[in-house]
Image: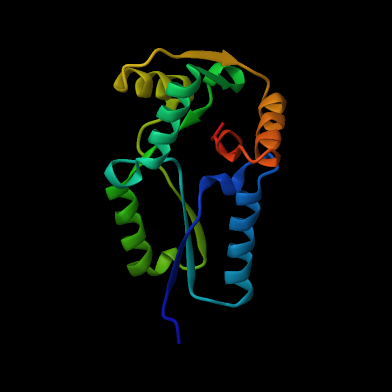
Length: 160
């Protein structure tokens, strides 16, 4: 009797790295397909804005705590942050547009920014010095795994 189900995940769903959250999102999508629900999956990029400030606060906390942010390829990877109001509009459209049925849709902001610029912008906003260090992705993945296993999960959950 369900007319429409709109589910949210994350673009982490598409990562090539081993990631429990990505696997959980993929499983949820597979379950919606298996159950033959009238579904739409919205996978937002990094959510920013008043209601989506958790991501930026996590970055700010990391900068304040360590002053150094390790990033693969010196932070040249791009992200297209989406504002909470824009994400809400995407969710509303998914509820009302028939062409969204049975689709996984990436909800991204209009403009791309590299992670290094994002990190420096957060540091400037919180008046904290920051140094970005280029680190191999495999080393960051290992550090994340160790962080999760040691119970210091925040560093392990950092988006890289």
